[in-house]
Length: 88
Image 1 (tube, one colour):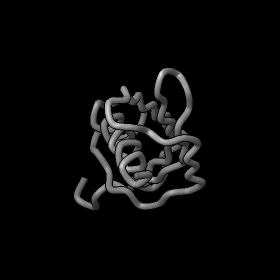
Image 2 (image 1 turned 90 degrees about the horizontal axis):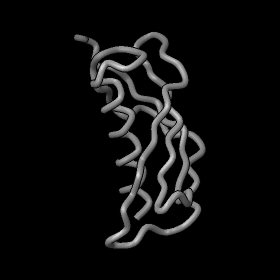
Image 3 (image 1 turned 90 degrees about the vertical axis):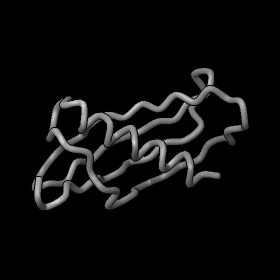
Image 4 (image 1 turned 135 degrees about the horizontal axis):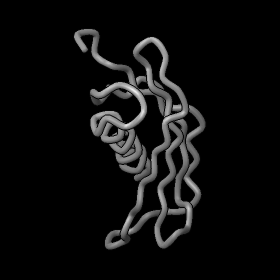
């Protein structure tokens, strides 16, 4: 289901934050999904590749563009916002 693709894309954004790439160094909580597009189904056994790119980080919110691919074919795209917990 598309919700699994969306979850994987959000986790890729969180992993990017946690790895200390550009932006804050803590994983965030999914706060918003903009423009999710599912282009083709992903089937059991497909090797899914998720790419997340940090677009901006302001006031504790990181915005990402994420793409899910199978064999270099785009299966889904989304723009996601992850919010950092207040104690970070």
